[in-house]
Length: 54
Image 1 (cartoon, rainbow, N blue to C red):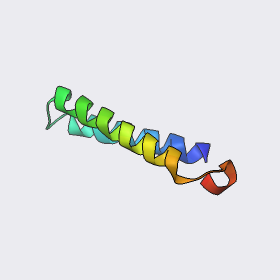
Image 2: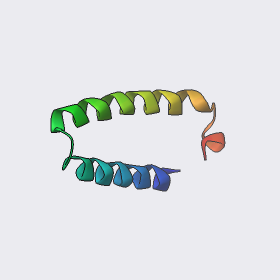
Image 3: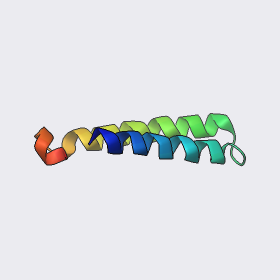
Image 4: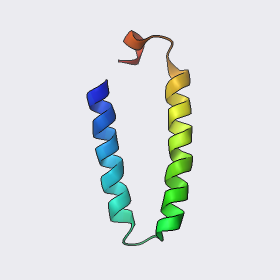
């Protein structure tokens, strides 16, 4: 599970890096923070045990 979390972090960082060429950084940071809140909330509500998360 932790490996996939790191892979997702790498993919997100690369995506944000590529998007900075086209979209203003302030807009990207706001969108990334809102997206992070939504995804962490969904991840925390998704399963009740560590075994079911993996």
